[in-house]
Length: 288
Image (cartoon, rainbow, N blue to C red; front, side, top):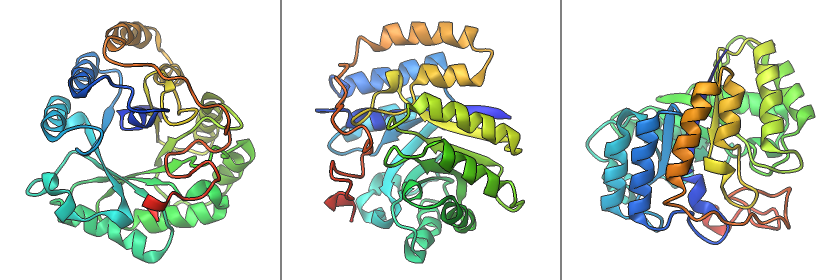
């Protein structure tokens, strides 16, 4: 089984406690240059231009990353090409979106998102899954996989509660369905259990159940909102044969620290560690 890593620091890292971890827009461009130079991960996810990154810097980041770029366009039910005019007129290496709701209208918008962007392939993060049973998650995967343009489906541990029992039940059911994709991604927040603990268990169960490819979203030092997500160095270790990549990662890290501010994590709500939910566990108003 192959394990791939996505560096989500230019998306998830911007949601760290207080503010973006990057000192300025130029620092984000420098990070992209280093990411492309060291080649530790397979994809690098970046926000659309807006409050986190200006248009010129975003264009430079995407140009620097080239085919490695994974562009986050926001939740699927939100998507409006008139508000994402930077995407018009070409196909992109990979567009990233999140499915907040499991209803048929939201799911059907995935295909139109790809069609509107010259049939760009999609990475779909299922933000809805960890509040539902493994059975319901399997059915959502099946429906999403039928939509045009979907390239990879990522299960997001939106509330930090994807524990070993949930993971075991999911793969037991998954193994009984031969019509599901053999390539899955996981976006794991630190919660009741650490992200690396859950990721290691996912690797074990995925290999036992015949997955061909597994992808993990990671960030530099695990930075992200509240308790953050799987750290890049932990992702490298999970890949195995990691000594050369760890040496490259250490060199990469020394350079990156010139451009970021490392925030202190928020530790008062360890079981609610997602960008889409507030500290009361409710979906934030802007995502409704």
